[in-house]
Image 1 (cartoon, rainbow, N blue to C red):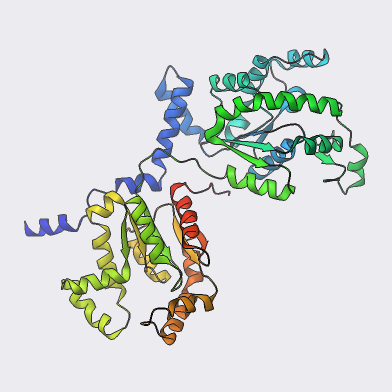
Image 2 (cartoon, helix red, strand yellow):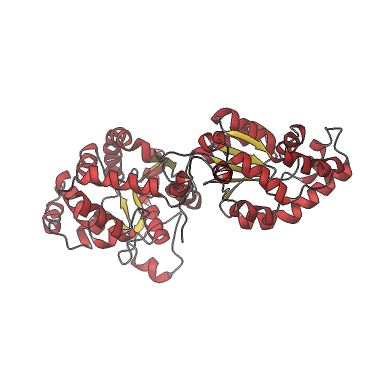
Amino acid sequence: MAEADTEDAARPWPPPAGAYAEERGLFQLLQNMLEELLIHKPDDPIEFMINHLKQNNDDAPRICVLGPPASGKTTVAMWLCKHFNAIRVSQETLLFKEELRQTEEAKAYKERNQKIPNALWANLIQERLSNVDCIKQGWILEGFPENQEQAWMLQSSGIFPRHVVMLYAPDTVLIERSGGKRLDPLTQEVFHTTFDWPSDPLVQERLVKPEDLSEQEVSKKLLEYHRNFPEIFHIYQKVLKSINADQPSVDVLSQVLAFVQTRHRSAAPFTPRILFFGPPGSGKSLQAALIAQKYDVVNICCGQLLKEAVADNTKLGELVKPHIDSGGPVPNNLVLKLLTERLSSLDCLSHGWVLSGFPRDVEQGEQLQKAQINPNRYHTTFRPAPTPEIQARLRQNPKDEEENIEKRLNIYYSNVKALEDFYQDAFYVNADQDPYVIFEFIESCIIKPLPCKIP
């Protein structure tokens, strides 16, 4: 009976089912399936869910690239398609590159210089996005929806983008830019006489000026865009990011990529398990305290935990005391026992925790893993400020002598590269700035899921 009591006391409670679900993405998987069920309302939900799991396409991109004329939608869409190996869908591809059931009907409107009805566009898009390549590889929808009615029609068809990129620029810039736009009829790539002229003479020879790019035509399209923009913004505001297109294309593409790689915050339960590590004087303790205070998680400093064990005269504390008194390192097995006991307590399991001061090397990190103490989603790492400034900051404390500071820094720098490799998905923070600026950045990393990883 006594052995059973001892075994129960050592077993974490509640069981780590939440950690298992987080590691394998079960919450997100269930959320995605539920969303698809509510959108499509299948007659046989079980069969539908089986087929959904077989598709294995929850991470495939579903992106809309919107913006006024000459804002660079085609450039961004084609670049994203190359980057993600996704399928580009635009007016041009729907009318001239696809054999869809209503393609000829849409072409007839175009030939008569009549506006293609919203319902016809929505039907073409729905049919194209239901093809196997779009389902498996994902899609980049360029220039759609153009108005509120199209957006509603797409939603009623079960088409919900995960990310909407909204490009913008001053009208004067767009009108000026549209005059230099050139199109490669062979590849459909867009170039510009001033900003992006191809180096290949063969490409230069076959470039053509689009027919509908007179200044009057562009101004007319801009007026229509500005009239429809607020309604589209309202519909997609939770998944939309506006990006300034009046800057170098490299900067635009970088900002677009950073956005579409983010995952939207899930409604799944989340218990933070946050790890801070960095050089002495980088502010780990302060940031851990700020996070713990704001989010009601348990703040655990490894050094403080050792001192408390000694002060409380626990059995482990008695084993730790000689090492503390001598100023030498405490053996890993003792530290790990203390941490395992503390992190398995009910408050840590229910509220989450933030840990600083451990691990200091890869061996300690591996021991944490073996003890099933794993930071989830966010391994926050401090990239050190310049060494002299760290030393100056530390010397404000009279207890720290220069020799000790140098020793601690040397230990840190000898282990940091291996630790960075061990925690490959760490976030890096410049510690040489205002503490509250640092806190805001760390907070943004904690409350948002990790970006998608590109194979």
